[in-house]
Each structure stands twice: as structure tokens, then as C-alpha cells.
Length: 489
Image 1 (cartoon, helix red, strand yellow):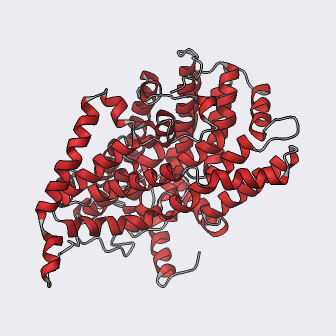
Image 2 (cartoon, rainbow, N blue to C red):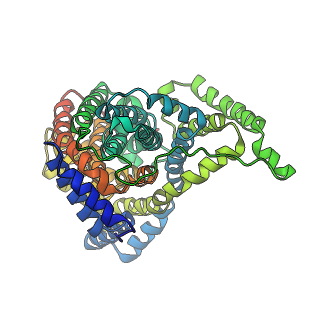
């Protein structure tokens, strides 16, 4: 990455403080050096998905599929995931709009008055961001970042701003995929969102068989407790803490002020009644959705989920103009989703649609290999480890699921592994590389005014503990579940 003005002096200041770091500092600095290396040598995440397209296409050709078949499946698949792509973009937008509303900002300011120490402040950020991640990973990122900034405005805490930033990222690195915005669980619960070629393999898997399994809730609870403990214990003491002021970050509160309407037409942009009427109309539809079915089924529909957040954002921002400003600020964070998800859909189509002369797809070849190297007992460890490694190179829960699902779910069927638990194996393992991958950090880093290298040292500590704990739980709890064949809509 290019060197920005002031980076050299800032780096020198941080190093001088880090020399005084306590026992946890050595491991944190190792993580920071690793991230600095990754930022220099790793390209944008788009490059990884582009390479994946080429590799899968070459694999299909090597499997005997004709060039025309590979090209056709690529083009046919490219647009097959547009509804889900937009849905995931709106998860980000909805979370941002709610988190930046005046009432939520007031809540953040009240929470920021609670801690009495810097370590307590970091623990609070970790708690808040992981709890909010169960509702929405988009909300988690923005809420956690704004809370860290609010706490940094209390100099008497001597809070390490880097540790607080890492704590604000824990929702994405630990618990989001176990919650309501889990991309894989959402996909599997919504047959209209699934690519047609994947549905026969997996069937429809409701939330009751994925994120609301007691086994899933147990994993989420354990991860939550462990993560908060590590965040608190690894936060530097006041002697060695690097504050926002040390880093040269301006954390002063900046209220978005609306200029009074200059033209008659602009008065409508400031008219709360429009927001209220929209909330009433949207709320009527949402109420009907929850009244006609179980709330678990209702909330598992991404359209309902996203409209709920947007409606809440309309209400909390009160005026149309303020709501539109929040949406405009949220849209840049969706760029990676919008351009990469269609390519993921193409990869899934090539995997499952490009056939050789024997009628065999590349997905079937990989699934047979997966089965040959695994047993029912080893499948959770094998799939979990594989998903975690692949997740560093393909940092997208929903997109990566479309790559893996065709063959890992086919393997789960053949090995008689509970299909809902296979989804949760993916969810828990897929979140692990987020702890050291800067892709999904971007919206948070923009709020914090930091670089990935500033916070990854602390999140790397989390990864060292999470990895063995998660893999063990996925393996042990798999024995408590029984396989059921795919259920078609």
C-alpha cells in the first residue's frame, strides 16, 4: 500500500509505545507484522474471485467439459444471483442506516459513559458488537465502530484505540454467521434465493435446523464468552496503551446538520410525515408476515429482514433528507458485494452445470474425492478446516457458500451428516479468517480512521484461541445430530 503523509512519524510513535507493551504485546506485534505483510502482497479481494473463476473454468475443461459448455454456464450463472446480491447489499445499508440514526447515536453516547477503565471499555465494545452481530453483521460493524469512537473521546480511560477497534470487529470474526444475517443459513432457508442447480442437493433448510439448533446456540455462547474475555485481558494497560490521540485520529463528535430548505420543493425532504406514512405502510406488511407464520420463518426471509431494518431506519432518522444522507454514506461499502457476487454465481454454475462426455460435473468429482478422504466423524473437522482456509482467499460468506455447497453438501448427503449442521460447520469456520482478513474491515476502518495493520494484531490473538475451540465443538456436537434427506419446497 502507498505511504501516506504522516505515516512514518505515526509508525515511529506507535513503535516507541509498543516497546513498553506488557506480556501480550509480543504476540500482538507478530499479528501486526503479519498483517502489514498481507497488506503489501495481497491484492484486492476481487482478484481472488477472478482467479477462482479461471481455476474453476480450467478444472471443468480438465474434467472433459467442452469449452462451449463452460462459457454457457458462466454466462447463465452470472445473473442468477442478482436478487441475493441486492439482498446482501441491503443488509449493509440497513445496518448502517439504523446504527447512524440519532436515537442509536444517543444510546451509544450513554453506553460510552459506563466503563471506568480502558480495559473495561474494550470489553464493552466486544460485548456490544457481538450482541448486535446476532441481528445484523452490517449493524455490528457500524455500531461497534461508533461506540469505540465515543469511548475514545474519554481521555481519562486511557483506552487502547487499536484494541477497541479489534473488539469492534469481533462480530464479523466470531458470531455474525451464527446469527440472523448468516448468508449461508439465509440462502438455505429461502428456496427462491438458491441457484436452481443447488436446490436438489441441499433442499430447503429452515433456521430451526441451522442457527436455532441448541448446538448452534451453544457454540455461539461459548464464542461470545471467550471473545469478551480475550478482548478484556489482551487490552494494553494505561502505561502501554496507544490512544486515538497517539494515533492522530480525530474522534470528535460530528453531528450531521441539515441545512434549512432553500426552495419550496426541498421542504418535502424535511417533512417527517412522509417517513411516518412509509413506516405505516411497510409496517403493515411486516405485521402480516409475522402474523401469518412463525417468527422464525418470517425473519429468515431476507426480504422481510431487510425491509424491517429499512423501516426502522426511516423511523429513527425521522426526516427523509437525513435518511437519504445515511443511505448515501452506506452505499460505498456495498461495492465489493455488487461486483463479486455475480462471479461467485458463475463459479457455482460452472461447478454444477458444465458436464463432460460422461455427464459428470466438476462438483461431483470434488464431492467424490471429499467423501473418499472422510468419514462421518471426520467430516466436521475436514470441512471446517477447509472452509477456514478458503475463507481467507474468498472473504464472502454467501459467495463462498455457493462455491463450497455443491460438493460439500453432496458429500454430507453421502456421509449422512446432518445438513443443517453442515451449514453451521461452514458458518462457524468461515468466520475465523475474517479475524485477519482486511476485506470486511473496510467499513469499520473508515469509521475508526485506522488501517488494518492497527487492529489485526489483537484479532490475531482471538484467532489463535478460536480455531481449536471451534473445530473441537463442531466435531463433538456433530455426534448429537441425526441425518435427514434434503427437503424440497
